[in-house]
Structures are given as C-alpha cells and as structure tokens.
Image (cartoon, rainbow, N blue to C red; front, side, top):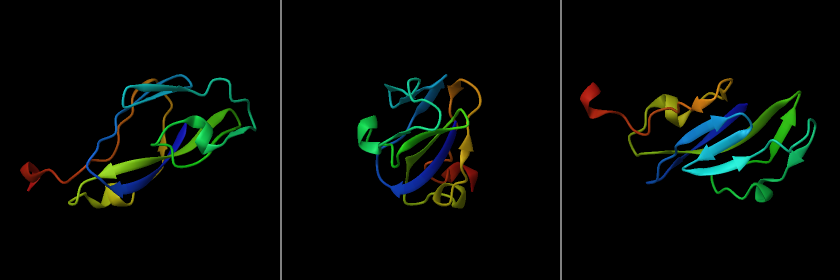
Amino acid sequence: MEITLTPQCRDDMLDIHRTGDVLTINGVAYDFSKLPDGATMPRDEAGCEWIASDVERVGGVLHMTLILPHGGDAPHQTRFPVPITVSQDGHVTLPPYDNDPLMD
C-alpha cells in the first residue's frame, strides 16, 4: 500500500491501522479488497473525509492520498511528508502532529 500525505493545519488527529486491504481510519474500516488490479475507485465512493484522492490498485498495490492533520508548530517532516509504503499489517506510523516541547 502506497500512501501519499497531504498536510493540513487542523485540530483533529489521524489514527490509521492496516489489515490486508482494509484500512481503519479513526476507528472506521474501509475495505478495498474488492478493487481489482488496474481499477480506480473515485474518492467520493470511498466515503471517507480523510481520503483526498481516488484510490487505485496498480500492480496489486493500493495507492491513495490521505489528509495529514498537523498543529501550528508542526516539524518540517510533517509539513512536507514523504509517501509511506505500508507493507505489513498493524498501526501506520505518521509524522508527528506538532513539535514536542520536551524535545527542546
């Protein structure tokens, strides 16, 4: 699974968990297992406010863009995130929401 992130300064948080072709976003499961190779699911059909693009399966790999919320003091890696390749089931690690004041 290839996830591109589009950062937005906002107050809510994002929690993602992957199990096969099911992506659980903030506790709601989105099952992409029926999307065949070479097909595209329009963003609106996914029914998720966090999905910011169509969802595609290319060469067996799901591709999508998700909104990445961040705070006003987010670090560079959050404001300019690199795409994430998710190859295992479990929690998806995202860039930090904000700079941690304890790290100063």
